[in-house]
Each structure stands twice: as C-alpha cells, then as structure tokens.
Image 1: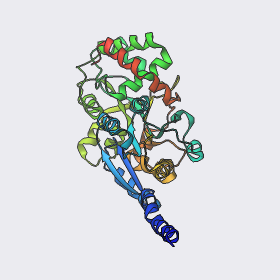
Image 2: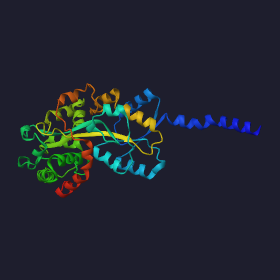
Image 3: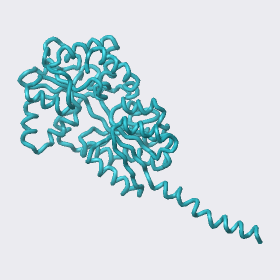
Image 4: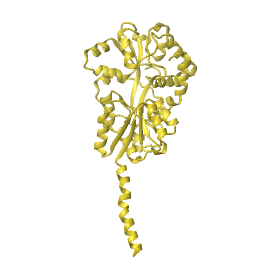
Length: 339
C-alpha cells in the first residue's frame, strides 16, 4: 500500500517538474548591441510567428561581454547580437559561442559570411564619400588613393580604434600585406584635415561642408540621409559623391551585423529558431527596408536609397579573416598615429 501511494505521488509530481522546461522553450533571452529602434518590429514578428517571448537587454558590446563573463554558467543569455566582425571575434575568443549546426543557416548564409560559431545576418559596405567641388571622383577610386599626395589636408576620419576602421584595416592586411597596409595608414594620417573625431555621419557632414574633401563611411548612414525628409539632409547629399572603392580589384569592404548562440544558453532550441528566423526572407527584407542594410541571404528587397547607390562588387573575404587580423589592424593604427 505504501509503495502504491509513493508511485502515485511521484506521478503526480511529473507534470510540475516538466512545466518549467516547457515554459523555458517559449522564451529567448537576447543580449543585443544593436541600438536601432526599427529592430522592434523584427523582434515582435519573431514572437508572433513562433510564440517565443523575447527578453532583451541592450547595452554597448564591451558591457554585454563583461556581463556574460561575470554571469558565467548562470548567465540567462541565449543569443549575443552585435555589429562588426571584430566584435564577434572578440566574443568568440572569449569562448562564449557554441557551434550551431543548421542546414537552413548553411543554405541561407554564404560561407564567407559565417564562421562555425557565429553568423552575419546583414551587411553594410564601407564606401568613399567626396565633396564634388574639392575632389575629383576619378582620383579616389580605391582605398589606396586616400593615402596619395593629392589628398594632402583633405581626409576626415573617425577614430582608428573604432571597429569599423579596424575591420577595414583587417581587410587591407589580407589584400596588401601588413607592410603595405601600414604604409597606407601612415599616408592617410599624413593627409588628415583634422584629428579623427565623431561618427560616420559627422564625416559625411564635414565632407559636405568642405571641412575636408573626402572620407569613408558605412553605407547605411548614407542611406538614412538619402531617405530623410529633411531639406537640409537632401541638400547635404547633393554636395557629395559616393564612390564604390576597388571595383577593379578586390571590391568594396563589407562590414556585418551578426550573432551567435552562447554556450551557456538555457533556451538552446529557441536560440536556434531565432538565428534561423534572422536568416529567413521576412527578417532579411527587414534588415534592408527597416535599417538600410543589405541582406546576407539572397532575397529581393525594395529600398529606394540602396537602389540609388547602385550595384557594386563586394569584397568576398571571409569574415573570419577580418576577425583574425583585428589585433594586427589595431597595432598598425597605433604605430601610424591614427588615434
């Protein structure tokens, strides 16, 4: 009799034990360094499609990485999202990501835009912007031209420690070798119109104002201005020319936004579903239409600003190569005085 009662008690407890696991499968804890308000629709659409609730924490990359490290095996984070291969590489070097095996992700995301542990879901090109009155576009057809003597006192730039510039240097190291890449950096520094400061939009405005003749910018900043309804933004864009660099050689440098599943993820099934969702048609179109980025997967988009910038040859370097060269890139900038 006592044995029967014990069995009944154990059976009665089973649904209670299983309940947390079932509830857990309907949750995704996202740590994101993407700070775009337009991403709200991206996340709500995932919940609508899957029933999985997203708990999101947003902060700067370094803050999130430090938080994940401090939380250790008890971290609630399932996914880490950020921009730039260098930042994803940093998380990878810390051993935070878990390999994800997904036929869908392998089919949707090109091999050069993923690693075994993380995936790019959108891309943005790093282009040359020139003041139409101060610089002839035929003189700045390649990144290498920015170091030429004709541009003395005409180049504006953001900090050499910013990941966007680190990734560009990482690409140049791969294409030119470290010695020539450093020679290029020193040449660009010698051509500075002013000390590096501000973000990409600040560089675009400085070029339009004639403070400098040329700068480098990520395309989605330009697309924002092209789509702006503000008259001053339209006038600004009329003063500059957009040049796709290195179209006769290795192509325009590609920057990425991406992420991966963390080793300690408590909701691994939800995490994989989310990564696969980001590679799907709806999300890929959203990256383009909502935030002016190019989709990583092959999908048709309708963004007038991206269309206005025209077709281009992208650099096909694997993003893992950019990550591998990131440390050397920073050292080159430091030696060149690109602060």
